[in-house]
Length: 289
Image (cartoon, rainbow, N blue to C red):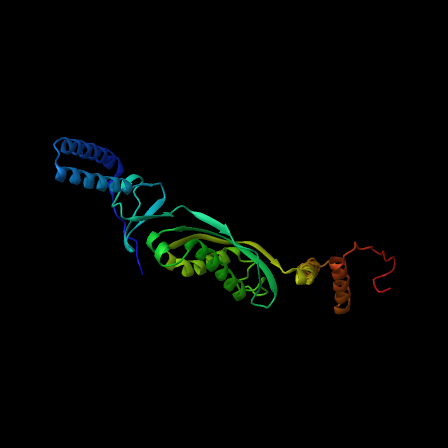
């Protein structure tokens, strides 16, 4: 793999002073040679002037968070990161690579999660180039490469995890966003490492069941929520009944046999677990009537 070689180039401001002075000197020499009718001096001045004109092509600008990749006839020479006006060999080709932080949002992909349910998913990836040589020479188009590989990593992640988990030991796309974000970042970074790209952040921006099963899944979620609520209500009611029986027995308020205890438990559970308010009935007879 081609690794970045950070290279220092001459200051463009110094060259901006030296080259015009040399040009004036060559022009003056040409005039002197022409007046003296010196053919060697005339030819030398013309050649020197042509060389100076070529040297003026060596100027280039480097903006902040930008790198210039230098090549000499197809051979990688180095990368310049020093900002400002610079000067280098005029025969160097100079390709600009941005080192700024960039981000993009993938298209909404339709994939099957690990449970086989069709879902829609999209992600936002924040990235930047850290090795300009790898970005230019290791892949054909590093921007397009980032987009395609990020979507491939997102597909792979979605198929490896369920949309929602029914077990606490399973990492789900919906219920564990932080863990999924870390896994997605690692997955994308593995794919983009060869392109000289660093992934700063990767997060899911859109997650939903596919339209054809969204209604059925909503009903299932509602049913699960009802069951969970009922379980919590029953657990609380049983605890309250147990506490009431213990307190009655401890304070000696009433002595109940097993049959009466069962009836009391039944009545309390109906009152505590019922969806409507209880309607009390006053018994005016004895306890056994």
